[in-house]
Image (cartoon, rainbow, N blue to C red; front, side):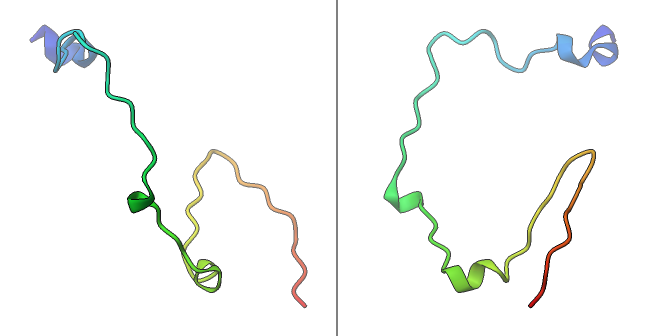
Length: 58
């Protein structure tokens, strides 16, 4: 029952015996998005406050 009151006290894994593997960049994982398609994609914004400056539309 103590683990229900203190969820951080329960560990799913023991201490790491070996270091984590290093990730390497790979051209196979690269995602190229054409410039004309970028403007059509959604923009995700996260934060406590959002400030914006007016933009001119010509």
